[in-house]
Image (cartoon, rainbow, N blue to C red; front, side, top):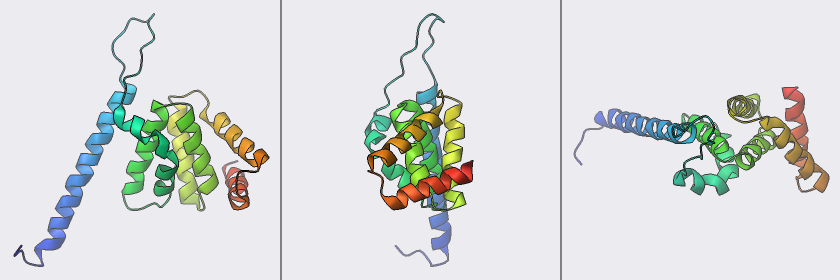
Length: 162
């Protein structure tokens, strides 16, 4: 194209803003699908609606956590929101795995804050997400399947939280 160099930063910013808006709309739509229940009488237990996008993400909780921990620009905020929606959508497994991953991999207070923020969000919609995550941590430590560096980081992070 023959656009002048002066237009390039504005063009990139416009594209970035459009992508930001699209992601926010996607997250809002997912939030509605996860938390909106079809109208039912009080005696009926509403069945959650299937959300194929979140179903496809279930096996990728650990990768999503690791990407969020990179704290890149706005990306980690979207990833954190997506983690919370995924954890709320398929409890208890995804919630436990996400909290476990954040507790064992966070190396800075900013990274650890992602775990405490996720816990705060999940506490509003799930019964006691932290005990299950702590049980997963303890099981991994007792089984010896958690590498020593992650075990050390886990105990350091738990001490910081307490």
